[in-house]
Image 1 (cartoon, rainbow, N blue to C red):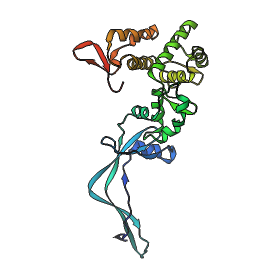
Image 2: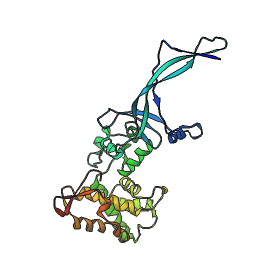
Image 3: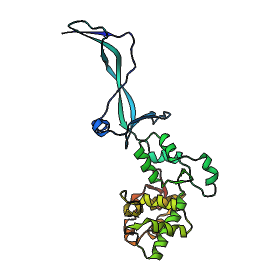
Image 4: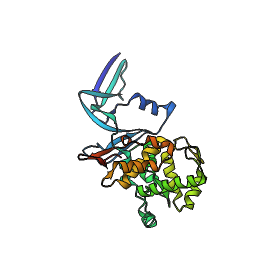
Length: 294
């Protein structure tokens, strides 16, 4: 059978998007999952357009090619013993997906307001909900929720907030003291409701406490029980202490000693500055400052 190809007078706009086998699998009919395109104002480091699966974000970049690919469509004019095709579009390049390099936590810090009990009710009119954050963030839903968990974000008056490092530190110390008085070891599985009541008795926010507990606990905890992950907890507490106590510089030994004192005795051997991102000041090895990414 003869095949005749003609160039359609009206060319359509198409872009070819190269998908990895993993993404194809995630959007296949047998494994249907969320897939969305998003766009933010492009910068030198961010191209703007992204594609989000349920748990990953990819930057979309256009790659030019010297080859031209025609997209063909059966012609509307049928001729016996002949297959007529029309080229309805020309593609000079394709779009490729690159795992997004931007830091979701840094992005969320710019979107979610810091909680201050003195002004929270006044700020509510300018607050953001978790839905607002998801809609306004060029990241997958899973990455956003993980980032909010890392920041110990919580809801109050229907809005999403991030606690200050000082509030998180104070709540952790109150929690440690309350557990000690009650004779409860935090090495074991905890009753969240009982821990909440102890925090409330100390005059602290149960919402912030639950967010802190969620940050340092194993991810598979149930709603009424929690098991603290020693590795997560040691690193998190170190970063919080750096933020509250190391704004300028701090003596290394003083800081490490304080860090250990705020942890259960069994976890203290895990304290090591190597697990935090810090840098020494000048030629004095006993001082250090916080660096970006802590």
